Length: 189
Image 1: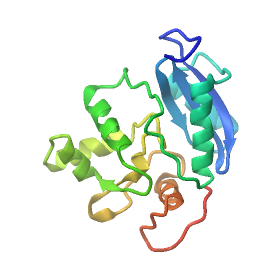
Image 2: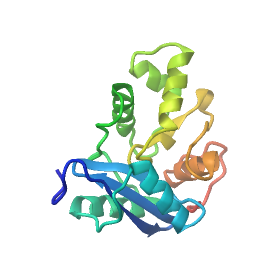
Image 3: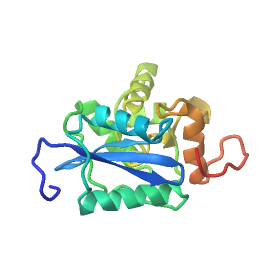
Image 4: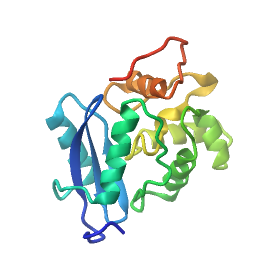
């Protein structure tokens, strides 16, 4: 439980990073949303507040401030492990909760595919991979739940729902030393 919050309240905070304004929203149980940069700070905050159903901005409590510091370091190219950051996925269906827990086990620079994740969850057909892809497109906590580390069949990049799409995904992977086309990329979206 995060200090000073009721179980139902959600607040958000926008902060600057090496790639532009990002934001987080949290409940008493942990992060409920991470927002990567949109066109500008106002668009980033609007998207975050709507996605998280936030009651408004607030100063982050210590645990959330630590997560923000980690996100800032990560987006500057530093290796950061988010596996211990508290996330609140209680509002999500059991499939997405299991999927996101499985994704959190992927470490820095490690990738998998939609199909491999589907198999881990007991689905062996193409529909399982499709369901994984759809659930990843609705990942409320990107970076902390590293959906960018999940690739399409054959190790192809696949899609990404954040502003900038697959280009953003490729740049996040490049921060971790993963270069799908062999060309180095610089940090920054």
